[in-house]
Amino acid sequence: MKIACIGDCKSFTETGSHSHGDVLATAVYLARAGLDVYFIGAIEDGLLISDFRNCLTEEGINSEFVSNSSAADFFSADGLASLAGSVDQFDYIYLTGKVLSLIKEEGCNCLFKILRKFRADGGKVVFDCDHGSSKWNSEEQAINTYKDLLEITDISLPNFEEESLLFNDANVEELIARHHKLGIDEIVVKNGTNPNWLSTKPEKPPKEFPIESIQSALNPNGAGSAFNAAYIATRLSGKTYCGSIEQGQILAAKVVLNAGVIPSK
Image: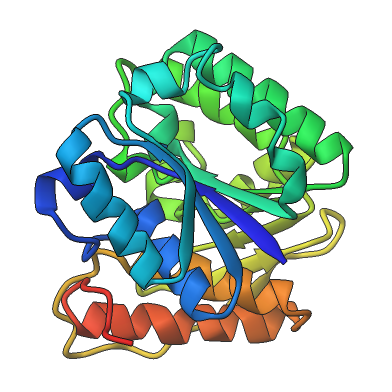
């Protein structure tokens, strides 16, 4: 089972590590769970790219699609041309709104075209808008881009607090209904220390999954990336929705208790 994670390498150049919550952290967790993981992204600094690739290799992540260029160039129509002919080797593609906020409109449109073909050929797209980590020029731009991506999403992993503020969802049920209307079948809502929610059928009420209170939590950063990875890895291994959410909650709790830092192997 191959999964490609499309992410932003900028945070690596700023911190020199992957001890933060983003797509890279999710890729690390997925690789540790035994999946065949590829990272897709760009890093401008020619000196740091070797460090970044070594970081990926140490975690068992394939760096074939890590480019020595700017994100704007890599995610342009020309830059994505080579990727278009390679995505058919993957079973799943995972991305968040953070990387979308760094790409120009032309690049987003080209990426969405690639993802549409990927799905038409049998692949599945997993998306978390991760709006809190994104840097958009305007809320309108963010909303329109998210809608376009959600229309080609198979598994959606939204954060209620972030999305409800952006889309004016009054409650979790409204957020879930909005996603179902866009054609998404599998929706798992993260909601901080409040219960997670699952919906796979729009005609049925969503299911609530309470989580245990973590009294000694040090830092919530990275919990969402950890939850996403554990949920995806467990679902891709053929486990139930309920079991996958449980594993997501367990890994997220470990990260929260470690101040948002990726635990050692």
